[in-house]
Structures are given as structure tokens and as C-alpha cells.
Length: 419
Image 1: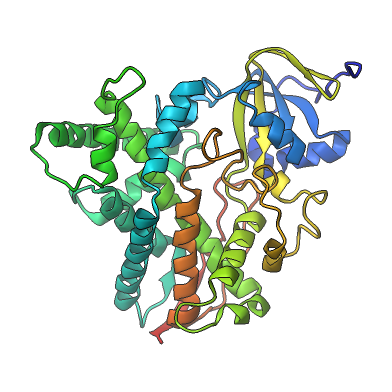
Image 2 (image 1 turned 90 degrees about the horizontal axis):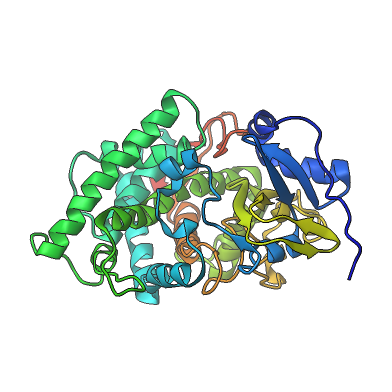
């Protein structure tokens, strides 16, 4: 057994402000400073381990060593994830709840969401063919409509209300002050309405197709063969709706990549439907290259030793997602945009982790990753092969300390025409 060694520790009482200030760069900068892929800091007043890299990700997703229960800060649970949802479960309970999400990711359901995505982009572009269009704002409308139709949510209220309230949950999840409270209010409002929908489905007042996630989630039973409480079903339905709308961040970066790397676009122009493999390589590189989630969190389940380091029970632990996706030990020339790198990617669940890592079935890898890829491939193909447009002068820069990060201009296109 290797001799125990001290985990490098960052000096100071607390580094929460530095984390907020540095954002996506916080962990990997300190990896270089301490020449270690494991170090300790203090976040929100408590000791926190920080990890970066492929082997470290494999460690982090070992369910015998790390737990997700009570890992996310309460302010994040009350905005981004909700309380009682799948992200905070472990063991058999997590596996059982995760299976519910995977059950709606069938090929038929994924094909349907691809069709809905193209329909909604067609509708959006038809409305805006002669005007300038802010891609991010339009993507949120497109994906809100896609999400609600796919999940089976009946329309109530205006489209703008749904877009604004669902966006609050991921745009201001880590905000402080009025934005945080607005995000919490939005979650409360949506959850209460979804709870009533669940009750209406169960009572027969609301009749919907049985293959809709709203129906499937309403009648899901836990390990004790009991229907989930309506408030938990509401949280899990939002764990479908919110992430679909949040793909708008990736949509914005996808169109930004078309502007920043035009030499990578010609290979995508292969008729109306494009080249599926090349579309996928491009999308995967967008997800690797641009910032999305900065890190994910867990807690040490029990004391254990790893590579000479002692991990103590209950310690908060952060895995650097963005840094691992830019790790030069994993990715050749990681600061270059090279979709072709995915032709030879080994498919590891621990080195390419834009939405988290691990295995789909037994781990905590995002159940919606396939859905994300399909929506983005349809969107990319639509922008490359179905319409033409121009980029006016604008600010394409984006901040590494805004979470989520977005191009300053949110990407503007003009002179839009259908081909």
C-alpha cells in the first residue's frame, strides 16, 4: 500500500468568492499551481476536495466511495435541481429512479424530439426571415415548445412566461440576491402547477397519451411499490423540461462555432440531411470546447485511501468537468477546435464529461445526453443545410466566470433565408 501523503491545501479561511470570480478556471488553475490533480480548498465555509482528470473522474463516479446525497448546496437544490430529485439519490433508489428517465429515451422518443426540433426551428425562422435574430433567445423559445410537447405538458399561460420561468432555473441557479429569489419563485410556481397536473392525470381529469413522460412519471412506483408523491414527480418532470431548455446554451455556442471556425463547416454540407457522423463530431467538439457545467459535486461516503491520499468521510468533493475536457494529458491541443478528434475518441465515460461522467445505467451520467446530442445535430444541420444567413458585426467574447457562460452578443444572425 502506498504511503499516505497530505492532499495539497489552499491557504485561507474560505475561497467561495474566488470560485465565483474565476468560475470555470478555478480548479484547473490550482491543479497547475500545486502540480496535483487533487487538492483541498474551502467552499461555503467547509473543506472541499477538488479533482481533475480521467482517473480522478473514474474515482469520483465510484458509487462505493462517493455519495450525491446532501452534496449540492441548498441554494442550488432550490433553483437548479429541486429537492428530492434523481441527482440527490444513491444506490438502489438512484438506479430505480434513473431507469425511469432512461425508459423515455427510446429510439422512437428520440426520433420524435428530433422531428419536433426541426418543426419548431422552421416555425421560428419563418417568423424571422427578414429580421435580425438573437440565436440564444430564439433557441429558448424553440426548446421550450419542444420540451412541453414532448413531455406532454398542456399549454397554460403565455409562451414567454414559460420561457422566462424555465430559464430562471439554470440562468440564475448560482446567483445571489434578487435573481436567486426570482429563480426560486419560478421553481415554486412551476412545481405547484405540475403537481396539479399529476393529480389530474391520476384522477382521469386530464387524458394524455400513455407514452408521454407526464403519464409515465405520474404512475411511476418507488422501490416500495408506492406512487411517487406529486411534489417529487413535479421535480422530476422539471428535470426533463429544464435541461431541454438549457440546451439553448449549447445551441448558441454551436452557431458561434460556425462563425469562429468556418473552415470546419464545409464538411457538414452534404445535402439536406448533412453527414451524420460529421455533424456528431462537430457537436461533440462544441460540447468539449465551450464552457457548460464547470464542475459537479459529491461527498465522500466513508474514509478511504487513494494513490496515497486519505479521503475523509463526508468531505465535499468537486470534479472539474470543464478542466477535464481541456486536459492536455487526455486531449491533444485541447485549446484548438478540432471536431475530427472524435473520429478516434475511445468512448471513455471518464474523459469526455461535459454533462457529467460515469456509466448511463449504474452511474450518474446525464440521462438526457443522447437527447442533447440529437437536438443539437438537428439544429446544426438546420443552420448549415436548411437556411442561409450572415453574421453582423458583434461581440463573440464570453466570460469564464459567468455560469452559464454565453457569448456577449448571444450570437446575432441576419438576412436569414430558407434554402
